[in-house]
Image (cartoon, rainbow, N blue to C red):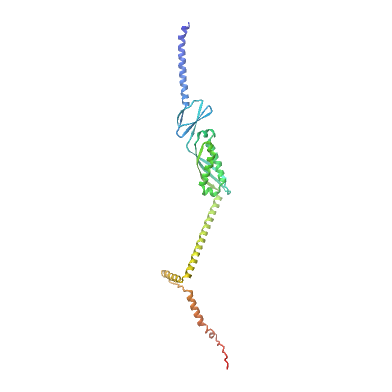
Length: 286
């Protein structure tokens, strides 16, 4: 009787085998897609197996064990991040509002995943606090005229803070430094006063140099009287080239003194006669 039962159970077993095979195929398709991982050239895949770090892989095609292994992709390209406008007080007690932009990239994907929950947000917060600290340690003139030095200082400080996270800060740029309107007017007045001061200094230096040259010329002319006559002739030549109706001839003071002495000598004896009195008579002996 058992020999008759075996042929009847064989079709059932075959049917169950086919059913299990079909179910296996159906389940294998989604598991296959869950096992495939494609990592781009600019990415790295950090793999965990049962919660333990295995390492970073990529680029290329990889297979992981579904439900056993997990992969997190990390972008290695440079990220451009805007730092929101920060309001702070400079070292010389001036309130400013400054915004900046930070350029950074991941150099160690394992640290970027394991040592920090969100490296982008963490870098943004570090950039904000560092920007406020640097503003508080700098003067307004440094922010306006020495911005390159401020950028380098920001880059070094942020890079030191993010280095344990596997993040490299390549550059930091301060974009705008906004001041209050009254502070802008005060700076304009200060700049105007500085320009006036420089103009006065330049004029004073010019007058001082001109006085020195005149003093040197006077010494040379005193040592060489011929130069005075040459200068006199040069002046006459310059006057002759001008179309003037009146020409003034300079006369040396020495020549005028000669005429003055001669006129005084001639007028001396005639002065009493003009007054109507005769000179007193002199008495003679015997």
